[in-house]
Length: 402
Ligand SMILES: Cc1cc2nc3c(=O)[nH]c(=O)nc-3n(C[C@H](O)[C@H](O)[C@H](O)COP(=O)(O)O)c2cc1C
Ligand SMILES: [Fe+2]
Ligand SMILES: [Fe+2]
Image (tube, rainbow, N blue to C red; front, side):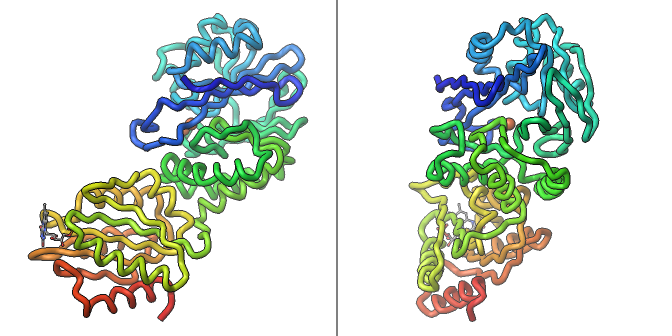
């Protein structure tokens, strides 16, 4: 059972965080050996007691215990629902039951429908308009809709008097950081790659809304003092950093020298060609980040996706398999093209036995995307010495070095 954190983080504002080290595949899909946290918040202000989101149902009992250590759930007057995905709403029905269904639920109009659809309950619902400000207790809450970060229902809350930004999924990330806050730079640096992976795995399909919504948030010129997301670190030392990071991931800003290499190899033929390419990448002073599917190793597709946005270039290696792309790679490419579709150069190295087809299929897949396939090589069986030069030249072209 993961650790539960309950802490008053500013006057009358509490964080309730649980460290989920049980979920192996987030959304039954994404490998997260690093785990994830669910962060809910509770604010006491004047006569009001406001709950912001909850935890996954798996941790319902722990959530009620944590909540009850601060207030009697009966005393909750308002519940702000930023996003109805059950990683945040799963424990809500129990809270409402203990509350006697008295609390007013605030959210976008989608939320009311989703509560009924998911949990079969009718609630005291107050829809909030985009940009609407509502006084609750002694605070003014501004609700800003951020559709598709992560669902159509998604919004954030800004507390005007305190500069607090409750982000829901926005500004969240995977992993179980060893701290609540972004105070320690080492903690932040270790955490950010998990944010990139989270963004692409979970929100990547709606990538264009990242830029759109971040621009929208920025247009309000909010004085951000604290960013409190529903996953991962809370930002108080440098809240602007996580907004900027989100933008960078959305736009695919590269980390200098990073070349992503993803390949499959059943019997070592593709591996031979890829090893020449990787050698050339290193010779040219770049840093290859290599993922492979072989008979002893299986890359984590979630991690591969997370490494796309900040790569300068990508090398794909795979074999023709039953007149198609090797299945694990076909799936990986489908996911990359769907969730991490960026303007980045690509080199494709394929091998075949009796009739190469993988190269053409990959080119056709990529032709419908923002990626730019610089060169595709279809290699018959083992890469012969004479062809090594061609692979090296392909890497040179990929990296813009003739
Ligand atoms: C299960 C299987 C299916 C294959 N299907 C094809 C095919 O449809 N067409 C082809 O030209 N070669 C096919 N091959 C041959 C491989 O594409 C070829 O040996 C390639 O070099 C394998 O590279 P690798 O061992 O690095 O994965 C197949 C090989 C295997 C093991
Ligand atoms: Fe979500
Ligand atoms: Fe979430």
